[in-house]
Every structure is written in C-alpha cells, then in structure tokens.
Amino acid sequence: MVNGRKTNRTRRLSAILVLLCAIAMPLAAAAREGGGGRYEPPLHGTFWSLFPPLAAIVLALITKEVFSSLFCGVLIGGVMWAGGGNPAVYDDAGEAVWQSGNIFMGALNHIIHDGFLAQLADGWNMGIIVFLVVLGVIVSMMAHVGGSAAFGAWAGRRVKTRVGATLSLMLFHLFLFIDDYFACLTVGNVMRPVTDRARISRAKLAYCIDSMAAPVCVLAPISTWAAAVAACVPDGYEGDADGLQMFIMAIPFNFYAILTIVMILSLTLLRFDYGPMATHELNAATSGDLYTTHGRPYANAEEKAADGKGKVVDMVAPILVLIASCVTGMIYTGGFFDSGAAGDGYLDFRRAFSGADAGVGLVMGCLATVVATAAYYAARRLLSLRDLTKLVPDGLSAMSPPILILTFAWTLKAMTDSLGSSQFVSEAIRGPAQSFESFLPAIVFIVAALISFSTGTSWGTYAILIPIVVTVLGGSEQTLLIIGVAACLAGGACGDHCSPISDTTIIASAGARCDPINHVNTQMPYAATVGAFSFVMYIVAGLARSVAVLPMAVALFVGVMFLIRKFFGKAIPVSADR
Image (cartoon, rainbow, N blue to C red; front, side):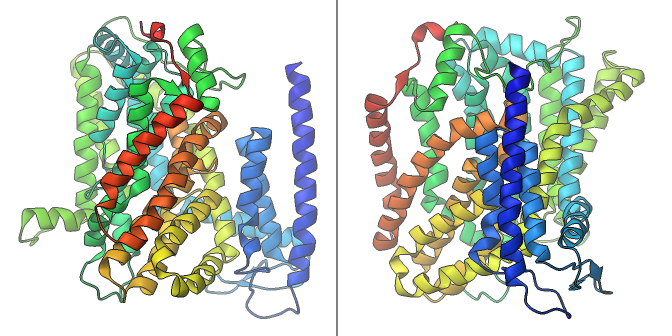
C-alpha cells in the first residue's frame, strides 16, 4: 500500500511538472523577440518572475515532497530564463550573451552556471554549510560521550510539565539572540530530550524553535539580523539615524515578532492548540507518538547515549564555549580586535557587529568549539582521536538533508533574481506609496510577506524593500519611516515562517528532527493569525504614528487568543504531564 501510494504521488508530481514546463515554455518564447547582444531574460521584471518559487511552494504543499518540488521550481525558472534561445555563451565579464538555439541547453547552462555552482561558490552560503556540518559534529560528540542523555535526564527530573518544558525552551532561546541558524540547531539539539519527555510533538517543537529564533534575533540590537538590516540602508541616505539606529528604533513597531512570542506564551499558558497542530499535540499527549504522520524521517536517527559516563557539564560546557566562540568570531570579522581600534567599548562592539561577516564568524566559532570540546573530552578520557574521526562523517550525514534542501532553495532564489523579481516589486510598490502614505506600512508588510514567502528568504526581502522604503519615506516624518522599516522586517519574518522553501524553516525542522512539510502545515495557521493581526495594527500605526500602539496591540491580541481558544481551540489534557 505504501509503495502504491508513493508511485501514485510520483506520477502526479511528474504530470504536474510536465504541465508547468508546458506553461512556462510558450510564455518564455513569446517574450523573446529578436536576438543578439547582451541577454535579458524573458518576462524580466514582470509578475511572472515570481512564478517559479510559487510553483515550488504549491507543489511542496500538494505532494509533501520538498526536494522534488524545489527541483521543479529551479527547472521552471531556468526554462523561463532561457526564453526560446540558448544564452549559453558568457563574455569576459561573465555576463550571458543571447544566442539562438535549444531552450533546454540554455536552461541547463543557467541552472548549473548561475545556479548551483554560483550558490555553492558564494562565501556566505558555503560558510553556512560548513557551520551546519561542524555543528553536527559537535552534537555528535556530545551525544557520543553521553552529555545529551545526562542533560535530558537532569532536566527531566526538574521540568515535569509541558508548560515548564516550553517555557524552558523559550528562556534558552533568549540567550541565543546572536543568530537564528545558530539558535535553531542549538536549541533543538539541547531541548529535544526535554520536550520528548514532556510529550510535546516534534511539530510543536519545530514551531517553538522557528517562531522564537527569528523574532528574538530581529528584536536584538546585537545580532546578525541587526547587521544585515543596517547594511540594507542606502549609502546616500542622509537622515537623522544610521542603519543600526533605525533598526533599534523599529523594535517597538515590529508587531509580528513581538506578537509571535506573545502567541507562544498564550498557547502554552492557556494549554490549547488549533488547526493541524492540535492533532499532533493531542496525539503526542495521549499516545506518546511525537510524529503523528507516516512521514518521520528522523524517527530512527535518535542519539545513542554512552555507557553512563557523561555528565550535565559535558553538555553545558560545549554550549557555553560555542556561544562565546561564535560571538568572538563575529566581532573579530567586524574589526573589533584590530590594532588601533579606539574609543567607546560599546560603540566599538556595536560597529563590529554591524560590519561582521556572520558566515565566517560562525564557522570560526564552531571550529574553535570543536577543538576545545575534543580536548576537554580527551582530558576526561571520554573521547579518543579514533572516535573523533568517526564522528566527523556522522555529523555530515546528520546535516546532509538540510544542506541539500538549502542548496536547492538558494538556487531557486537565484532563478527568481535572474528573472528580475526585485525590479517588479520596486515598480509595484512605488505607485501606491505616493498616494497612500499613511497606509504604506501595511502595504509594505504584505509585500514583504509575499516576497519572503515566494523566495524563502527574509534577508533577501530586506535587501529589496528597505532601500525602497527609505527612499520613498526618507522625506516624511521620521516616525512613519521607522514604522515602514519595522513593517518590512515583520513582513519578511512572517513570510519566512509560512514558506516551505525557507532556510530557517528547513533548519528549524532539522533542529527539531521534524518533517519539514509537517512543520509548515502546522505552523502556517499560527503565523497567518499573527500576520493578519499585525497587518491591521500597521494600518493603525500608520495613522496614529505613536509607540503607544504596541501595548494596545499586545492587549488586543491576548483577547483574540482567548476567543480562538473558546471557538476553535482544543485543550491539551492535564494528564499529559508526567
């Protein structure tokens, strides 16, 4: 029966792929007129530039297959870019030059040359891949010596309830405000034994990890997110605040991030869930099944504890070293330790974070942690050199699924960028911005959510939208500009939470060891609830232009949660606590 179901799913996916390519080819060919000269992609800067990622998202939700859906999106993007020609020739500057020929050869060259190879050659992307692999090695080391099992047993004796486990997870997240990737994997691997004991489903664990990671980082003045946002402010901007100051001033207006944290607290303290998440939680609470669905790719990948030699310190010490090393690595790349650096220590620290290369800094921190942890375990005679050499491929193997998905997602984004999606968004938002200034924050929120949902990246969304928002509202009242920037940050995080091709969605699923599609299906109703309420509050904020909107938003949203609990919620039985 299972094989038959898989065969039918494969047939449906193949049929859909053929249909989508059949749609893409005539569209692309019709848009290509003439030939010769510097190549411009067909449908460049039009609504159709968003078609490949949207097709991948729809396929992922229908087929429940992430790899094949992303590949379909990449293939469709390549076909649309080729446009009936064969832009396989590149000049000395590496730019594509149009040449008549086979559309599939043009698409293939674009996918390989400008897609996979270019993305894997990108320093930031490769840094994230190395970071994931090294972090996987650290996790394997902690599991091998029994540190993970010891921490799980220790926490299990103290955290007795589901509420306590969730609140502990949230508290742990607050200490990992540096980077969302770092937080997703670290919190997932540390807290998973605790939440498993509390019978919290893997889908709920993934939701809590994902919904705390980005919101905490986007609210922290010292984080990789603050540095990324500051870098997106145009160089020619001459306002009263620089990029980092603008990020800090936008914090009280980042309704989505703040209300997402309020929502987790409400669901936890009121002990209810709704939508698909309720099914997962009730099943985990009553039967102990943490997965619910047939797809459970990590069910047989649990850590095997050592022979009882591990202690809690064997888990805590590497985590503390990891945090300190990653912070040090990032401020090092930002020039904090350069000779001749002067002045106020706080200002230097802030500037160092603004100019940090997070990818390099995180890799440096992880590598330092591996060396320090291996030396510490060797001194305690828990780990030998032979054991370490065996754990390195184990770490790579554990992280290979998210690395492959990330590679496909990055390539899909490259296809979308090559079709001129940023130009389309820029032109689409400038028109209404001039006529509806007070409503611009709400418009920006929706546009940012759609872009982030389609491309799977919030940082890419910020790079597109923040310069537009600053340019359009730079001459307006400063409060409205700050609200507009906050709406962009909030919308990017919202769309990122809803997207099955998002990098943080993939990494949060890996940290929780949850099927990515299960994570998306259960998280989307929650993210949509907060997103819809945030949209309304950005209309209010655009009209009121006062920070007093924040306490009103929090109070009203708590009231909304009580209403959802009454009419749609399913209570989790108290007997689930063990």
